[in-house]
Image (cartoon, rainbow, N blue to C red):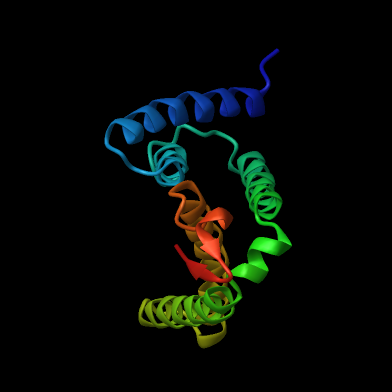
Length: 151
């Protein structure tokens, strides 16, 4: 008896290990490797995944886990220390991402409501990715800030 979801998980894990090894050799962040794995294995890539609905469910769980780990690593004290960059930079990044993604979506022929929705989706995912990249590169590490000022 073959379980399609299990074979899809094995394909994704195997491909992600290969892509992550390549990214590590090229000094590319791991999150980029995960995104490349999804593009390559997905239905618009090499068609390695046979059950996109199950994989979408796993992707949703993966996003929740990513946000959960970011939340665990970011304490309230470190957020208070960097309140100015977080309170100014965060909204600016979200607004610029929403505007850029909405305009690009609109140029591709989508309605304004669909374009704005896509803009907010891209804003949410880009915020999580940028925060994770900053944490991995130690730029956003709480110990690097003294009274809200980077050291």
